[in-house]
Image 1 (tube, rainbow, N blue to C red):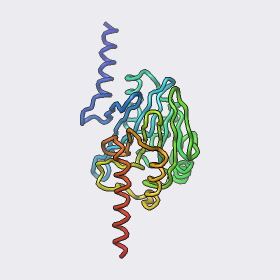
Image 2: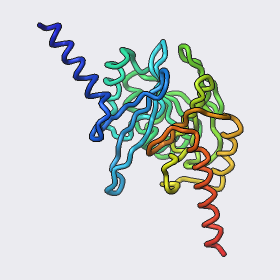
Image 3: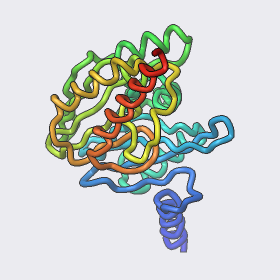
Image 4: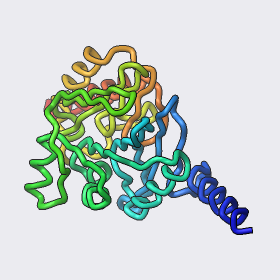
Length: 248
């Protein structure tokens, strides 16, 4: 009887964690192979906005790319991953200093998870007296975790002065974070820390370095096709053209 109850409880956890209900605070979807994309939500000025992040299941543990924007989902995400894959999260990469990316450093570091950020991100967090990652990575670094190899790359300024991306060459996956806008985005979104002029050149660097991605994960909204890179460049050019017109 106890065994049956345990099985029912386990199935309930998996069902709740991976159900794709519109009302779910933590929808998780399978991208391809061992890659999963998850969303969390945040109330920004009265509007509920989604944020995308990703995790990779390796032989030695799970690697997260960005933390949930919703702090109430920090632990549920770990629980969901454990229930689904029977593996622990071992690494977390924050792709820039904003709360929807680096906001979980303190929580996950206390859980014994290795946390990583770029030097520029660390400088910003230190200046703002916010929790920082345990490990600082150079601007262009290749990691091997279990059976997977991936590259973490700083393309230059864009959405933020410190935004980095991750490239999985074998699977042709580009994790863009907020550096890449969704193909359904109507504008560039929050530009409080952006350098739009530099963003244009930074996108071109990514296009040259990581050619023909099969999947691209943007920071917000939906879609995982490589069209989002060209769309981001289009939005950047439109913004710059508009600003140029306004100056005349």
